[in-house]
Image (cartoon, rainbow, N blue to C red):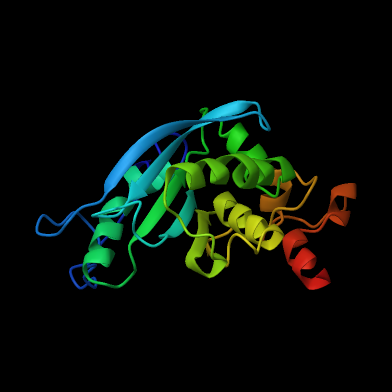
Length: 225
């Protein structure tokens, strides 16, 4: 067991001898490689700053037609643990995806993950930061598309619900969502431990005012649209 993100997420990994091959995972030396640059993004809206990693594909050019792009939350996890930039290189080399630009957003900035828990569950201020501060900066500095059908927003857990919520609010920007185990049990005003404890089969049922605030909040927003 170890901490996958260096902070709070322990897990173990088992791979059997008959596991299917993962041809796009891991760095390959016989293909062209993209480039990863690190930036610091300052937000007046959120009054904070964060690390941003930007992947550009092999032979990136400002004279190329605008590139498809991916915005990915918890970027450092995907970069350090999943080696996602190598996966992009491999998929592009095999022509499984077009050349893309990936904006990897760092969301855990303290050991308690409190800031991540404030920002990623549907948060209008964080949506403003992404759409009014971060993406305009990306457009000014990188050759990315404005076509929503060629853009993807993605994340894991809270990053998954954040991706869905931002695309729901701004379909003119994001036409595709990759929500990996999205934290859709979240709803406004419900403490995380209350959401989790209801999932325990052997816990005695009780009623509280919090029960009036059901989990499937975001699903209801879709249904009402």
